[in-house]
Figure 1 (cartoon, rainbow, N blue to C red):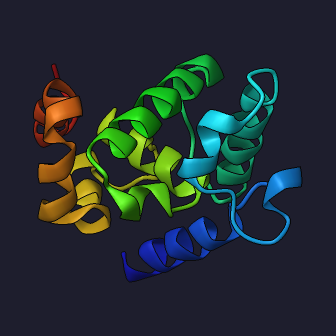
Figure 2: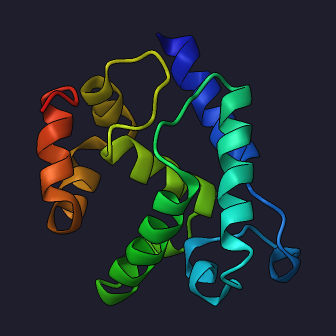
Length: 142
C-alpha cells in the first residue's frame, strides 16, 4: 500500500505538462484560464497518458476534464483558494478525478481520497462537489 502512494506522489511530481508560458515554472491552475482553448484538450490528454504509465486509468473523457478544470479554476479564484491556484494543473486534474470516482489505481476510492485529499480538502471541495463526494464516500456506488 505504501508503495502505491509513493508511486502516486512521484507520479504527481512528474506530471507538469510543457507550456510556452510556463517555461520558468510549473503550469499551475491559475494559468489554466489563460490557456488557449484549442490547447486544453492536448494538455489534459498528455496528463492522462502520463498517468497511464503509472497504472492509473480514467473512464471519463478528455472534454469532461477540460470543462471541470475550467469550472474548478473559476471556483478556486472566486474562493481565493491560492493553494489550488498555485498547484500544477496535473495535480488538480488528479483531485478532480479522485472526487469524481475516476482515479482508478487499484485502491478503494474512498480510502484513496481520504489519504490523498484529507478531511480539510474534502471540506473545501464540498460546495462544488457535494454530490460527487457523497458518491465517493460510498466507494463510488450509486
